[in-house]
Length: 355
Image (cartoon, rainbow, N blue to C red; front, side):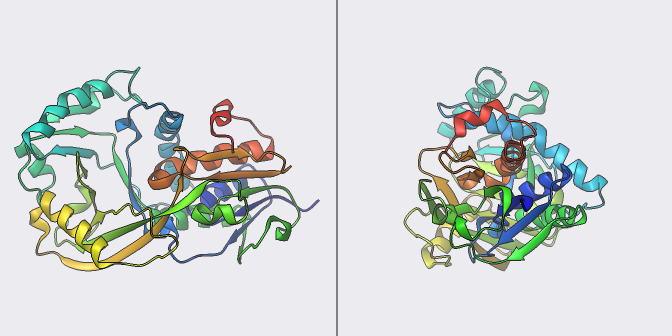
C-alpha cells in the first residue's frame, strides 16, 4: 500500500491535519487546489471558545477541546522554530451599545461563570465587567458604549499566517504537497486513509455532506498606532467584529448564504461591513483602506461539522463544515480525525459529529 495518509484541502483544517499526522510519524501527501475564495485565505478570526455558551448541538464539545488544544499547538509550532503564526492572546472585549444590550452583560457573564452553561469553562477571574471608559481605553477607536466585559483568555489569529506555519512545520517533518484539483476519490493516490478537508468544496467528493458555501467579506484598515496589536478583539453584542494586528484593524464580516461560489466583493457587502464597523468604532473613519478579502465558509446545514469516518467508504474520513468557526475549531477537529484515520486513537466525542 502507498502512503499512510492523503489529505485533500490546504486550508486551516487540511494544514492542521497534515501537521498533526506528520508529528505522528505518518507518511503524508497533501493535495491542495488553492481554489479562489477559500475561507482560510480570507479569515482573520476570533479564537475565544471560553465565551461560547452550551446549546443543543454537540458544538460545545469543540469549544472545550479548542480551549485546551490551541495553546498547545501554538507552543509546539514555536518550539519547532515557527513563531510567525498570526496568533496572540490579546483578550476579548464584548460591548453593549444601548441600554437594552447593557442589560445582557451581567446575565451573559453569569452564564459563562456557570460550568453547566459555559461551553469551555474558564477561570471566573478572567471574565470581568468593566466600565465604558475602560473599554474605550482598551480599544481607542470605540464610540459610545453602555456596558462591557473582558475575557482575558480571548485571542485572535491570521488564517494565512497560521497555515503557512503549519505547512512549513509539516514539510520539515516530511510532508509532500501537490497543487491539483481532485475530481473524485477514485483519483486519489493509494493510501491507508484519506481525509477530505476541502471546506465548501468537500461535497464535490462526498455528495452526502450537506455543506453549502457562505460568503464573508472582510475589510482591512491601516492603523498608525504601534500599540494596536495589543488591542483586544471587539465583539459587539449585535454587530460584526473588530480585531487588530500590527498596523491594521480587521472589520468583518458578512454572512451571505445565497452567494454560491461567487468569491466577489460587492457594494452591498462593503456597505454592511463599513456601516457596522464605524457605528461601533467611529474612530476608524479616517483609516486608510488596505484591502478587502472574501472567503466562502463551509456551512453544515445541520448546525455542526462533519468529523470522522464516512459510512460505506472504507478508509475515507472527513473534517469539514465548521462555518464561521473554522479557525477556532478546525485545528483540534483535524487532529482528532487524523488520529481516528491512523488508528492512533478514536476520540469518543467524534460519534456526535459522524457524517
